[in-house]
Structure formats: C-alpha cells, structure tokens
Image (cartoon, rainbow, N blue to C red; front, side, top):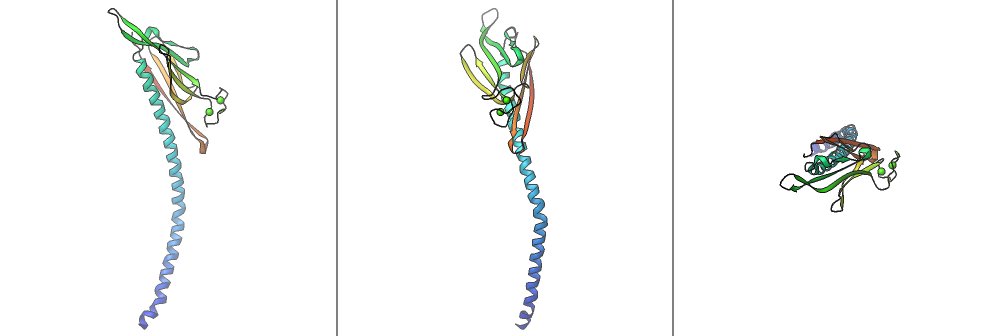
Amino acid sequence: MNFRNKNHPQTRGIVFTEIALYALLLACVSGPIVLSLVTTLKSAAHTNVRMNVGQASRTALLRIEEDLRRALKSTVAVGTGSSKITFNVEGGFNGAAVIPGDSIEYQVQLAEGEELNSVDDNKNGLVDEARLIRRNLTKGQQMVVAENLGYTQSYFSFDGKAVTVRIASLGALRSEQYTYQIATDLTIYPRN
Ligand SMILES: [Ca+2]
Ligand SMILES: [Ca+2]
C-alpha cells in the first residue's frame, strides 16, 4: 500500500507531462490542418463552379446540335453581330426533294437588367451576361436554353458549308470576386 502511495505522485506527474506534450503536439498540427481544410474548401468551391459552367456549355450545345443536324443548308442565315441564327429544319420529302419544316431561331441576348457596358447592372456577380433563346417561329414558341453566357464571346457563324457555334459559359465565385469562363465550339454541316 505504501509502495503504491509513494508512486502515485510520480504517475500523475507523467500523465501531466504527457497531456502537456499532446497539447503542444495538437497546437503544432491543428494549425496546418485548419489551413489545409480552408484550402480544400476553397478548391472544392472552384471545382464546383467550374463543373457547373462546363455542364451549362455542353447542355446548350447539345440542344443546338440536335436542331442544326436537321437544318437545311439553303435556309441558314446568321444575323448581324453574329448573335442570331435562323434556319428551317427538314419537313419531310415531297417525292422529289426534302421540304422545309419549322423555322427555328437561336439568339444570344443580354440578360434581364443587363446593358453592354462592362458593369454588372443586375448585381448577380456577372458582367454583361447573356442568355440563349430558342424560338420556333412557325409555332410561336420560345424557351431559354442557357443563361449566364458571355454576350460578345458567344456567337454563330456560317461559311456557306458549315455552321460554327461558340458558347461561352460564365460562373461567378462571388466570395473571391472571380469569374470562370469556359468557351466551347461546335461545327456542324447542315443538310443539303
Ligand atoms: Ca450581371
Ligand atoms: Ca452590364
């Protein structure tokens, strides 16, 4: 019993020393861990915005591609400023030739509340952003295919053989006042 009592203070002494060491070790290690966690979270936010921007571009181009593959070459017209394209999709076969079907129009136009002035007028974190509208002029229908596009960086061109579409998608990382832009090109040969 005496032996135990004699040793007790010594045991506690070791425990306190260990706790002090662990505390010191934790202080040394937790600093870098917190820093690394912040870096990881920031990097995840960047990856997230980048992925969304890339996905938005692909979705818009898939929709345009679907229409342009059915477009008749002789009906393709690109509007002034390259922000608009109109064409007729195939409408069947009359026994001698393919006949034009619905008239389709795609237009890149500035988002609501935005003017082309290098200022974020509608305060959504993006400067002069645009949306892509698809119109079926024959049926009088209209839908928004994509939003948050670069207005001047997204356009259509036609050289008489191939249509080239460039869609530039934007994404804002507002906490860092950083804007991602991913531009994707698509070249399609309409039908004769
Ligand atoms: Ca804006
Ligand atoms: Ca603006």
